[in-house]
Length: 178
Image (cartoon, rainbow, N blue to C red; front, side):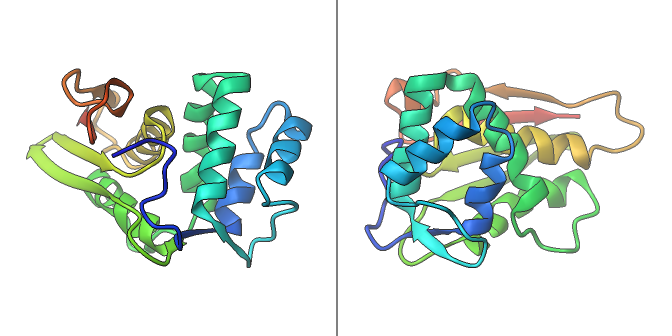
């Protein structure tokens, strides 16, 4: 799957998600200018915006600021996007990423975040969507960290070397242990 290319020209993202990303922008004025250039203008939480315009914003931010900002942007999503209310474990948190993704996007094919239980304290998330790797890693990191078990010393997230959209693969696979 191509990064920064919406799967459907009709796909949209909600304004609340757009606004959540603006919260972390160190260069907010630059971000607002880029949003305006990409026909998102002054986002409103109740409005819907073309996913392709949103992806164009990501691409321009990456080229002007770098990939670290994409990770920070992803880390903000769980605090602002709509997630299912019954999350009470790391497994449910990681599985809910796809549900939340579909709540906050609409119209046409948008891709997926596939959760796979890989052991008692291990899982995989397979990202098959048009967002950049670093953004996805930020979302996964926040969800795993927020809901890690109390008896866990931490969470480790690694990107599988053989599965990366930056290197031409259709998907990115993240291994999570806790």
